[in-house]
Structure formats: structure tokens, C-alpha cells
Amino acid sequence: MTGHNPYEGLMPLPSFTLTSSDFTDGGELAPAQYGADAGGQDVSPQLSWSGFPEETTHFAVTVYDPDAPTGAGFWHWAVFNIPASTTDLPSGAGSPDGAGLPDGAVTLPNEVRLKQFVGATPPEGTGTHRYFVAVHALTQALEIDPESTPSFLGFNLNFNAIARAVIVATAEPGGAESTD
Image 1 (cartoon, rainbow, N blue to C red):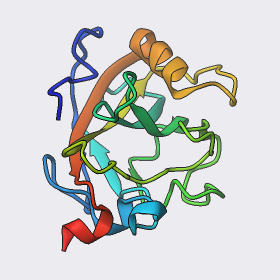
Image 2: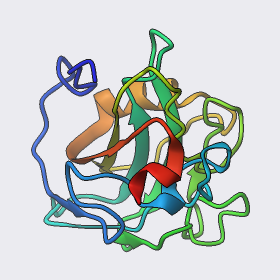
Image 3: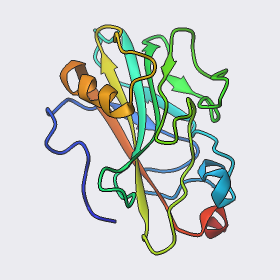
Image 4: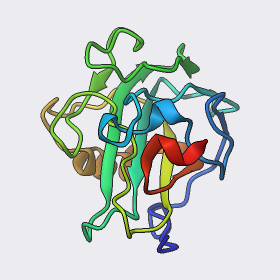
């Protein structure tokens, strides 16, 4: 782990509560949240949030690994325009068909150019990786090209989010078997 927090240096925002039944903050991802190439199932984690600002109209959810050996990290999932009436997502909401997402939500292509959640697959020799799972509160829907990158979404969130909740999961090289 490099110690880099991707939200340091961005505009500071108030926080709210974010939890997952699939992992605890600072704990390891469940085997299903690992990538298929690492013995997992590419299943996005269950997420629930509360305590966000009253003026929130939409949310965005992102999952980012700053420890990927790329120099730029790795975006595993990026979804925006989730209506404020949605305060939880079931495990698997990031499936290729997006069936677990509410109407109006837009999933951007991740680093492997798939519009879905792609699970953790830390390469051997790179140590423990951290996965920053964030829910961003917004006061308006975002007008972003649905083929944009998660980094472009992050740029827009930096200037439009009014609050952000973050929990961090970890994953080990060796894949889902390392969680046994």
C-alpha cells in the first residue's frame, strides 16, 4: 500500500454514513468482490448510506484502487445520477445489465472499458491494495457523456459534490482464495 488517499487535496466536503454488509471499513473484500481472473465473481458490494445533506437530489458511486501499479490507479466502478430516493444498492448492482441500479443511473466504462463493476485482482508482488468506495451527494443530475472516463466523472464530482462518504476495503494478491 502506498498510503496515498485519492481524496486528499480535493475540495474538502462534509461526510455522511456509508456501510456495506460485504466488508467492514478497513477490512478485506469478500471473495465475490474479487475479479473473475482472481477466483472471484466481479460482484459489486452491497452499500447503504444515510445522513447526507437534505438538499441532495442525486448520488454518484465510485470504487477506486490507488495502489494499482499504473501510476494513475485503477477505477473499478463509476455510476452517477442515482436519484436521492435510493439510499442503498444490493450486492451485484454493478452487473453488466445494471438490473440492481435505479432508473436514470448511468454506469461509465471502467478501466477495462466495461460498463459494470470489475472486481479486485491485485497482481502478485504488489502487496495489499486499498479500494476506496465513495458515495458522492449532489444537488443536481450531471450532464456527462455516458462514454466518459471515471476520471472525468471525478473531476466533475470535485466541483459539484456537496458531501462525500468513503469506506475503504482491502484485497490481497492471490485472489479470492487469500480470504479463506
